[in-house]
Image (tube, rainbow, N blue to C red; front, side, top):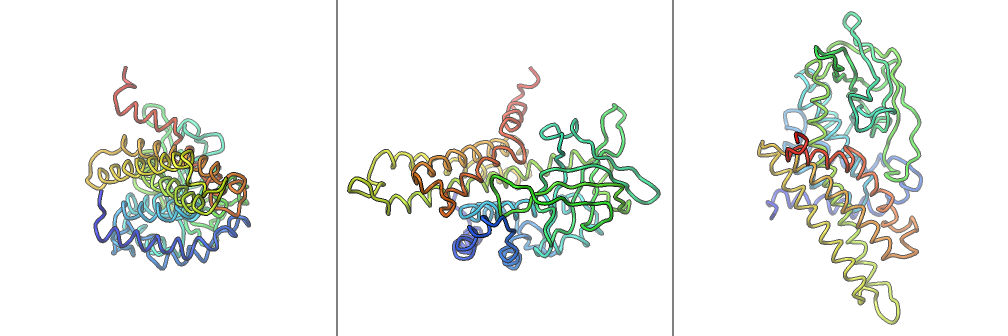
Length: 384
């Protein structure tokens, strides 16, 4: 697929930013496990947080594919920065844009689109995981004109930074006629009494991104903070996750391609037995396979994004893209580390970060097993 001039200009701009601004400093942020506020500020000034948000809401008036291109280019250099953008837009801002009323959009979207504040997506719980409705324990009830929320959320990206502004919280707000939990989404501003943000997790990867546990103890917000219709929270989050899987696929492709980039540089410089190691067919074949994985995964997310933007069903394609690209990222990170040998085990080299960052891509926003389940279901196998 040949990108239009507009898409290609965006891709090149983000590629240059990632190479010239992010790459020289992100390793230090990563080692310190420090959130890169200055990089995020510059990304906001570039308009990256507002790529798929209409201009009337303070965004750039682009589309979701433009966001994916930016995510891929950032992840070629670092995934912490890329996941910060992905979560802030696809999980933080997009639910408000998709399901919010005019007042909610006017209140939150301009700041979110400018990157002046970050939004978060409060779905996963400590005892939950893939079984979202079955594992949900967070509850909310109306007390007069206020929602009162009690519960805990786990592994929430962008939830505890100095610029986090709002968290969309999924909570059980009653019981359906069929006896199932009624799940609704409620917007909770940062700093609301009863809303506590834990200290940062100590993570294997994505060390320069913000991930925390959230607690709600008789946390009160206005009844008007309900996002969309009551009882539609789970459906909202399913739609959000379908879109988010394309974004995570783009991030995964970026990591996979970054492994190729770094390996190509290294094998031209590193010499063994009288030759650059790229001279040897064993290395050439590894890199050829890595490039094939990245290329195939890119086509998969391009196709899913194309169907999404055309208004066609894309659940299966999004699941395929997420599955294929996360596998490619993990496989390429392993092979790149092998190519680098002992240096691949050193944090000073990007492939060490890539290896640490890759595994979560097979888990977050739907595990690989969940993607296979979704693909099988879309093929009609679950009815057999």
